[in-house]
Figure 1 (cartoon, one colour):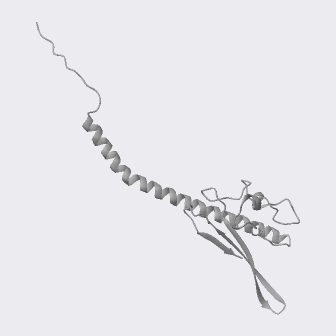
Figure 2 (tube, rainbow, N blue to C red):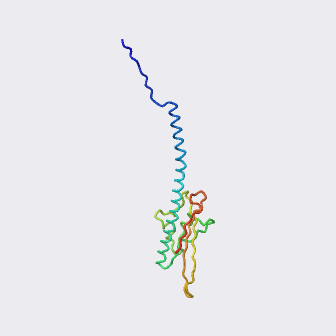
Length: 163
């Protein structure tokens, strides 16, 4: 009679294979995680700059529309302590003679954009008077939007524009 040999089949990993796999994954992660964090920070910075640029564009579009109606104006500076575009400022009428338009109404989302941390930007506007002749002055309108959130990747970056 022939004796049959039984071969035992094991499935799974040995402890050595598991340790080597974990070591390889750890080595790869030391390169991937810092790169991921850098990419995330740069993306948030780009979004913040884009939001500031969008605010500037929308406010100047409003300026041009109000200029065509004979009353050129930009939204006024916020009266809060930090001059930030908070919710109270964003829901205040831009033109005192019309309660219909607030800074929030200028945006399709119905809200003034904020930075990637959800905090409002600093906002400032001013007018320079330039005498061009004895009887005529030229006006130059300026706008400055700055990210003043210390935890933001775009901290202290700003957009300044003049017309």
